[in-house]
Length: 119
Image 1 (tube, one colour):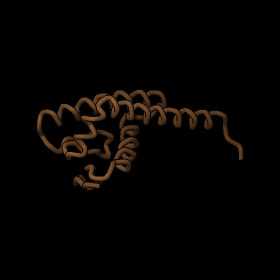
Image 2: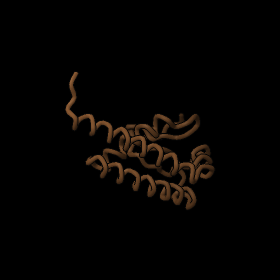
Image 3: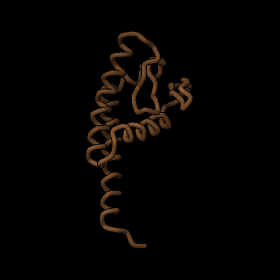
């Protein structure tokens, strides 16, 4: 099977960028590891298919945490999108699917129907 050189390079770039994105998301989570993990386990925030956290509890601490994490994620999504000539929204949605799928037991995720589900 023959591949055009440009398609191989594009595939490699996209794959590398997604790996960087995953690493960046991990870094974002580690920077706030205890707070984020505690908030998820306490049902204060949950993952969404949009690629961003959403606060389930509307207290100042939960909202501030979600905002901080989402700002960092948005920067990562924008960088990956720019590097791969795709939209930031597409990158965020792909990340959102992965984050929802990887959510741990007891954590909340917002399903495609917009309802919160506890894994």
